[in-house]
Image: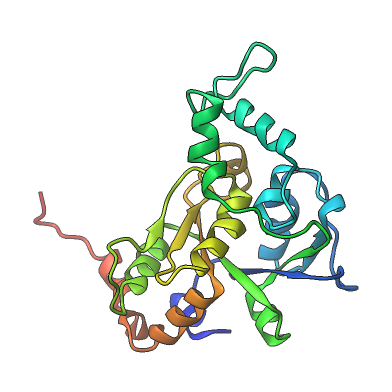
Length: 246
């Protein structure tokens, strides 16, 4: 277990996401449907889940999990379904038009992978012990854990004023594609996730996801032992109440 996880003491062990050429022999296959339910939840329970593209029922996850993405027709259809739709297809009204959906959503996230890879969800401690090629780390946090993570991300000097990226995306994109994109930046940020309406049903109502590119996780892990986390006083501060406050 890393220093950050030990000092933070989260309810859920963070989950590592990475890619291999083939599905590990000891991994479970997804049970179908949304990958939050079929891959993330089992990994939070301590199991390893892995699949190639054809084993994942949700085509949106082909984009979100670095499995080559959908073809242009599929991506155009997704843009229509996220907008007000058209005469042939009703939409969810997330955006005012397919063009706006394309720019504000799909136009911001690169397509990763060739479609031949296997994506793996595994408890972080097991993945690190096995020397897995970890790309992203997903924490499921409550407000206190989120506050601590955001504060720790500011511990080392940074030029920017944002340590958390918060923007529209599918939950799988927020868990993998967006943090991978952040990991390619000189100033990587954490990604706030589980803002997608559909997937919130699968996690505790008071929790969100924070996903980190692995290089940022390693930096924060190293910083944690010199930070406010080391003596636990941050937990006491949040438990204290000010009787004289307005």
